[in-house]
Amino acid sequence: MDNYKNWLIERFMIERKRFDRTGVYAYTQRTMAYNSNKIEGSTLTPEQTASLFDNGTLPQNNNFYRAKDVEEMNGHFLMFNYMLDTLNEDLTEELIKRFHYELKSGVFEDRANGYAIGAYKERPNMVGMYKTALPKAVAEEMEKLLEWYGKQEKNLNTLAEFHARYEMIHPFQDGNGRTGRMLLFRECLKNADICPFVILDDNREAYIEGLKEYRDKQKTDKLVLLMKQEAEEYYQQSKYFMGN
Image: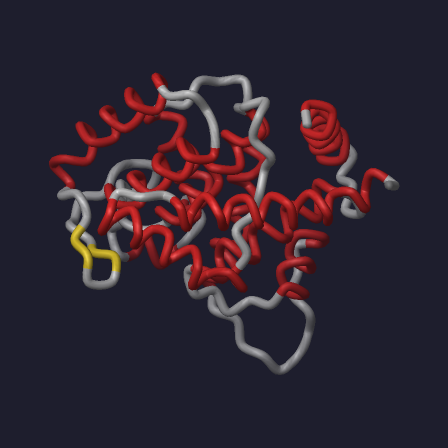
């Protein structure tokens, strides 16, 4: 596993530096950006996502594009790059806020709505029918979460609980799922015994059920099962670029 992850990180760094759009770096950027945004309602297709990443343009056709979808897709590419740049740093509140800034700083609609960018939310928000932490409680809850995480053995059970608790806090006005899933990918890369994974939109229902299971029962069985399945899928796709 170490060899696989070392290879993966090395290829990410080399291909990014070379502006290589043909290898595992580009595959991961496109796959993660498309699926993570799609889970949140993005209307862009995989082909449109690839075009944005490859050359910064969208295919010419008669379709209309939502500006927010395009801006958030580009922001996701930047957030992934920032994640690579900061792999050697400790996981802190400031680092998480910077992830959010990279994702959201170019989104006009969020700025027009007065959303905090790269800072914790200033207005209460809900996930469906569920209340999340009030703005005044977010900093304290995030501090507790990171303190707890720092003391845990790093494995899929820990990551699943960390992610579920993060999403229950919902520290930002918008973009919590995307920053949270980027944190999962980062922590997989950083910890020797965990294979990285991308949560696919095809498995959105299972993902939502996993978060619900923790919220209702404080159990991570469903999330861990999904993470294992997604890790195997990502590994099989990545193997192509290894020439195996």
